[in-house]
View 1: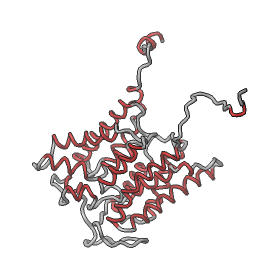
View 2: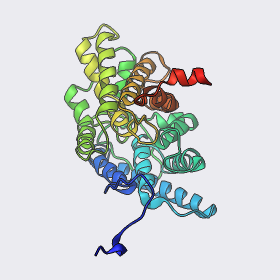
View 3: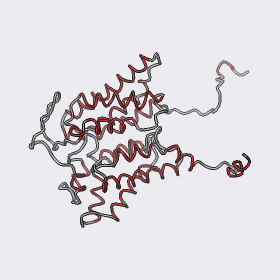
View 4: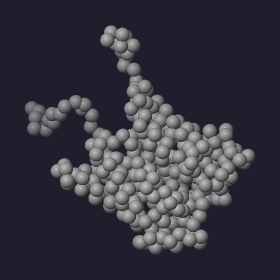
Length: 333
């Protein structure tokens, strides 16, 4: 006879998988570790302090929101940890510690929890938090320090000529190639926000996510290739077009955004065709903002703008049901 006590009765769909939100977010955290290590080597231990402070603030504000609204705590799914790391990766190492804490409150409470929590927010919380901080404290968000500069672990940072520097994107914005060579851009020995400088570390993390099947290649490839093709075809300043393209691809937040933020499950399309359209749209907007916008970087705003179009992209690229004629259904109505 069969042992009916071991029979599990559930509603459809009857698909079981070992992956859950916690395991996926843990994989993302692991994938971000190489970039964090490089940031500490490049900018010192203050990069780690800012990252830890931002993660703790995101966890606290998510816990506090659930506590005040008498909801089950959701901090165990690790999504707030990922938001905290990505938010910290989008600020300069000279930023005061209180700033990403406030940014974390905005990302978690306003962008994520007020819309219903993970799975219901329509834009990436970390990028929205970065945009909020950029609008609130533009001077602090655009103060860059040289790699290897000595910075205090805690407290404010008095930025002087001895530790300040220009980012490669600032040179590109002016139509000139950056002072840093391709190797320095690839390894991360340049100015910039905490987590964007090392293309190598970000690519290693992206390869891990692909191996673990946490993300697909569609969005990162479409995004990066679009930027590469456009900048190769339309260089500025009369410089060598190949060097211009390589500098555009390796500079700024393109790798960080394409691999870790444009691929966010909640705020990106679910269809393969839609993911390619999404990536191409992000690439087009990034180049447009870099070339014609008031800021040298356009990755964050490009992804946020495309986040608002995900519903339309999914609707237009959804696979057609076999034997289902949408036009005839509309005519019948």
